[in-house]
Image (cartoon, rainbow, N blue to C red; front, top):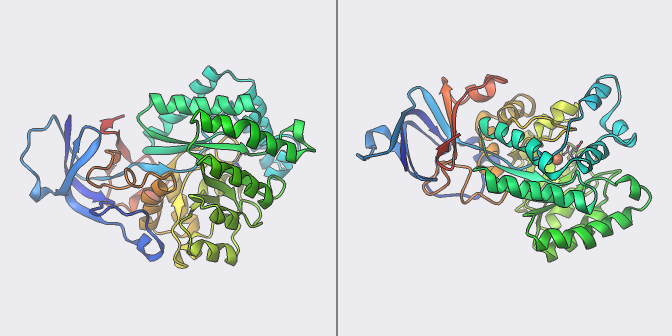
Length: 411
Ligand code: NIG
Ligand code: FE
C-alpha cells in the first residue's frame, strides 16, 4: 500500500541523518521543507522532498494537503493512562482549598485510584483504557509510554501491566510499558515501608521481568513517598532484570532524585518542577533526558519546570502529558506544547522538538519515531490549513488536526 501526500505547505521536522535527540541551542532549529511531498509505503516513510522533485509513481492513494502542514505524530513519553474511574471530587476539594498533599494524607490521591483499580476487573479496566488510547491517537499521539502504579499489590499491578500489553497488541500506536510498583505506600504497609519495598523488589519485579511485562522501571522519589535510598535500592534490583529507569523526581521537593537517576543511567528523569542549580549541572554530562510535564503544573497550580534555564544551560528537554486521574486528567499533547510556550517560554521550535524527537528518545524509540525520516514509522499529523507552525501553540485549545496517520494508516 503506497500513499502520496502532495502540495504540503510545510513538512516539519524532516531528518536526513537520524539523530538521538536535540540539545540546548539545537532545540531552536526545526528543519522543514516548504511545498513538499511525502511518500508512504506500508507502515514506513519511503521518501519526501520538494514538490518539484516528486517521483512519477503509480500509488494506491493520493492526498492533496494544500495549505496544510505535516509533522511527526507526538511522542508522549510519560503517562498513567490505564486507570479506573476518576478523581473529579478531589479536583473540587482542591478548588475549595485542600492541596494535593493534603488530599493524599487523608487517604485520597494515589490510594484512592488504587482502591478503585483493585475493585475493577481486568476486562473493565481494559475497556476504560481503550477509550483513552483512542482519544490520544485522535489528538495526534503516535507513541506513548504507560505506567503501572495504581495497583499497589501484586495482583493489581500485574493486572495493569497485562492491560497495557493487551493495548499494545490491539492498537497501532507504539506503547512502552513501565513498572511503577513503588508509587505510594498502601495502607496495609503504612508503618512498614521496608516491607512494601521488599514486596515490590522480591515478589512483583521478578514476575514482571519473567513475563516480559515492562520495558522500564519507575519510582516516585519524593518527600513523603520514597527516598533516594529507596530509589537506589529498587534501581539496583531493576538493573539485574535489565529494566532501565525512567523516574518521577523533583515534583514537590528536590532531594537528590536527579542524581540517583543519572547514577543508574536513567533514560529519563521526569517532572522537575523543583530544580536546584546542582540538579541542572548534574544532567549536563549525562545521557538522561529531562522530561517536563506542563499540564500537570497547570492542573495542580505548581511551578513549571524551568525549561528556559535548562535549555539555555545546554540541556535537552522532552515534553509529555503525565495523563492520570489525579494530577493531569488530560492526554492532549497539543495543549502541552502550547502550555510549554506560554508558561515555560519555550519557542514553538523547541516545543515541537521536545514533543517529537526528544520524546521518542525518552522512550528509547528515537531510531524509529519522532521525525520525518526515510524508513522511520509513518506516524504523522496533517493539520488544518494554518499560516505557519507557530499557529499550533498559538491557537491553544483549538483542534488544528485534520488527519492522523499511525503505521501508515489514517485513524
Ligand atoms: O506523575 N507524582 C506521581 N504520580 C502522578 C500522579 C499520581 C496521582 O495523583 O494519581 C504524577 O503526577
Ligand atoms: Fe507521572
